[in-house]
Length: 405
Image 1: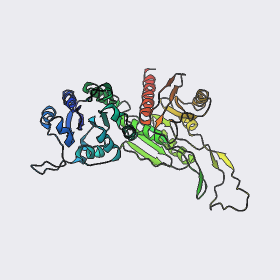
Image 2: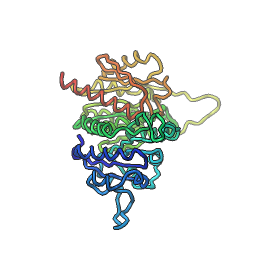
Image 3: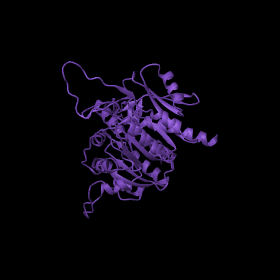
Image 4: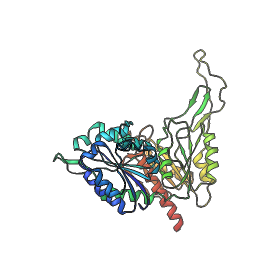
């Protein structure tokens, strides 16, 4: 799957840089075109001549070539690449990437990259488990980067622990697997709902919930990265999309989300209903700000909002797949199964607010995927981008099972 792929290999100043020569050789052998970008410190561990010989391209280390003055455009590199791999990634470079410190060619190239980025950390075990490194890696994950976890073993300090850069052969397998599954939704249309809905009380007040939209946006990026054309129907959130295959439709209320979702669902193969839709809205929205008068509070009459998951489940035609989410506080499995059946879903993703690291406003989630045939697959706590990959893997299996039925 790496044949003719454009791969940027970023090398930073760590002893594991010697292993990157093998990584470059293996990528070239697999048919990839490789452009090496080194930090100045990386040249202390491995020479540009070695890497240029292996890649067949001049190595880039500075913003311009000293003897000719030729400018090396990090923007052009970012557009050229199908993937970027930073191996080894030191604690310093990880911190710069996480916080946008663009003081060298490698980090500016990373900040310009439109393609997926893979980061292979390598450092001593105490640096690896330092809270700042842990936080910076979590930040990179939250941005959508892929972290290739380091292995355990003897380190440069001769201590034993986690911090060895993953072996080049395994990094190549990670890339090959990514591109292999990267087109398993090619030609598919997916509509995804994300975030909260806002139901107005008056011009300045509203009913809503704590949804951040992170899970839905992660699903949109994952589906697009795997070849789908995505319509993302988003409630009011502060997130942005990156992939050009995502068409974003911003809405406010449940009624607006319903109309936008059904309009896209007519041409869609899959609907992923991830939004936290307000169950109720105010019957008569005040046209002017409600004033506080005396001690009598205003009386708000609430009416039910449309059930978007039920509406899509009822509207789906043979071959379409609908996926729901169930955020529960008690009787999780029973409630999720009931929702799956009532709303004619093919699959439901269960998570619980009893887990403080899952649900609203956090970057991680712990889910159980339940399919219409009763299969339940629990997953450990993961970053929401990784959870999105698990959900899309399960959707792809449903598509395959339909083909084979």
